[in-house]
Amino acid sequence: MNKLVGVLLYFALAVESHAEVKLAVIGDSFATGAWTEPGVTLNPDDMSVLLNNEDNKNSDLRLSLPDPVEFQSAPFWVLKNALAAFTQVYLDRPDHSWILPYSKQNELSPTEVKIMARDGASVSDALLQVKSLLKHTNGHAPQKTIFFFSLMDVCAPNINMLTTADFYQRHWTDALQYFLGHAKFPENSTIEIWAPLNVTQVMNADVLDRPTPYGDQQKTCREIANQNFENMPSGSPRAALFMMYPGVYCSALVDSAGKDAKSVNQSNLTAISNRLREYRQKLAEIVKDLSKKQKQTVLVYRDDIADFKLTPERLGPDCLHLNAQGHLDLAASVVAP
Image (cartoon, rainbow, N blue to C red; front, side, top):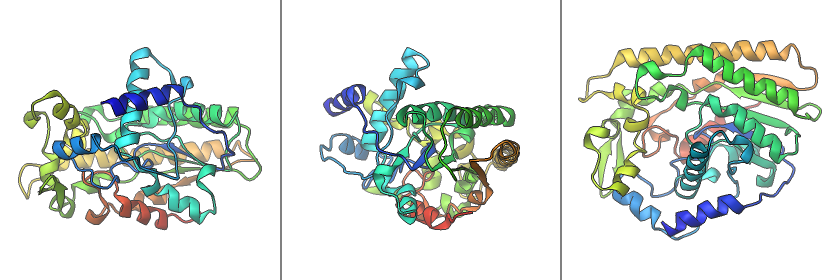
């Protein structure tokens, strides 16, 4: 607890260096290296050991700190800072994300990379991340900016609470129009908008049947998916850690797993797949429309990103996020359009 309080104080007082940024990433937990920290599992006892581990972890890449331009309300601001402090210290390892090998492929040093992406972010956070980026760079856009949101727009308590295609379009349009209208772009700059990954793949049988570490035992990904409020452990610390289970915060998706080895809620998967398809269509339309108005900055829609396979060996201990190997494979699959 003392360590987390210290981190929160650091977040409140820290001043980041303002090196020239050549690559920025706007996005969610698929860019932070979430769930790639060695030894982390969803077992509450394992997590408690990790929370009490005083060893400092070193990363060449740095995640961004919440900036005051993102302030919306006092409770939300406190929650955002607390979540950022917790995840960046205990769960995230940006050096294990696809961004490090991608930046090396493009001959960029870690100090030239700015990760605005945050765990728990959805496309509704894109505009705030853009504003925070421009605050950091004094209004100058990097040579390349990548937008990549894959998870939280289809993570909801139930299928009726997914981000609608119209809201998705509005949030994307607001973020990109603000960026294009307020940033000073260098010559030959590029904005890449990556399609969301097809996260319904985590409900494939080969993933659900995969054993994953859980304390001194193993559980299948189907068993992990079925951990929810009905079997929440007692005790406030253990119950709080339980909130990180996919079955708690992403039940619209993982409830599709079913209770037995042969059952899958196909109606949920079909609805989510259709919504992801709508998202991709909206993104293609937005980029096509905005590209007509640009002369100096190139906008590229990367629909091919959606083809990346979420196979069992690429998924982390929560059976939802990429592990270190998955991030390496994603970086290797991304070639310049």
